[in-house]
Length: 584
Image 1 (tube, helix red, strand yellow):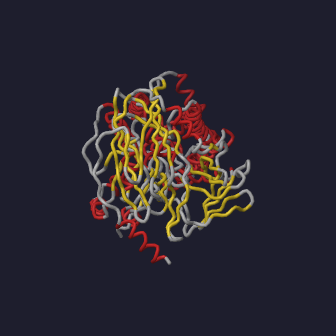
Image 2: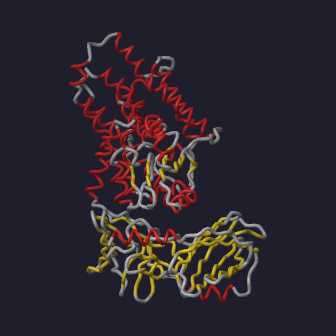
Image 3: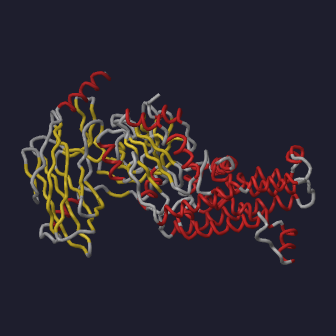
């Protein structure tokens, strides 16, 4: 049966023919399809409604075409366009084997277009299927004006559009099923679910209703789509899909373990050298151990919650920012450079606290411990390690009652190792010799990471303010470019990175810029995209949200002929990546 299915898929592909672009026009007509466009001015924007009327038993394909074929695509080279709505598709099953989603009568696509001049072009391509599938395209030249027939056309179109389900569906992926449910209950007469894009599960996967759940049975573990259509016998509902909420205890544990592991990330090394200097100096002092440990934990928690609080407020206001947002600000980076230069001057006794008040404050309150914890987070927070990325990704979509405890657990995990060393310094005491000149030498050695931090932050600032894109085998990330590559069936590797993320830079130097990886990517014809988040980018932020993440590094790989992606670990090795892309 499988062989027959693949044979039929091959026949469909074999019937694809070459085509020539049509001349610029306001409509298109053939023996298979008639396409027209209507427009209406609304303030500074233009509503554009495309109408597709099919002929002679041919059908065109939905944005999720099913198992074979390509969807209708629109390109607005001279304007910015947002798809507002499109008609409800139907299911086509060929020889009881191949399943497609599309339209065989009429289909409407409603766009809101901005940044346009008096005239602009729209390039439309589609595949018409019957006994075979044939691609075609046309170019439309539209005018910034209102057509008298628009109101009649949009009225007819709205009758074909899906309703919107206000409550998102909750999704859970098991080893061989995707389970969708809703707190308010699924609409009556639900028949099946269509994902917004192909590749999340096979179009012919059996689907059944079990109480308040829609169960989609799959051959392998499915990915969770972001949206789709819930098809019923009385129409369809447009729905958003969210991963099923995790247990708060699971999220807290994930965050706590992620915080502990964060101490091993490259971002943390420079700042923790300050703590190492402090521990080496005071390892033999019994008095004040508990106070110093508590203040270090307090500094870490204060910094974590301050950054998380600012992020929460900005996100509530609609800002497109994620974890590590502070280092996207050149002003913040400049301030941090000044702070670390002052720390260096203090370590080398160039800058001294001469006032009795400052000296007393340092001795009594142990403020060094607090500030070490505080600054360690500000520099380390842009990087994410194992477990941490998933915990933050989940927390970003939760309420404040879950969001802030997750970041507190993350901070506690991050602070724990050095707090324990502060309280129980016997390990350090047994290793280190008696106080002497070696402590001065150690201070100079441990200051090297801080010097490197100043150089690194200066390099980040340079790239933020002056550096322009350099030619590379990596293409700049755009959603349109990635979608185009996936539509062609090309394998895609996306590197979400930033100049202020030391883990990202380490992975690039050791793995992604290695000759073996570059050679394998070329041999496997993999499109390489770099999503550089050094400066704020709404497009990259939205892309991270798509993968339930809000921080970097993030590495995403799409195999050939698939829109099902795999997320790689935050720390890469050459062998691991070569294995993932099928080059080993």
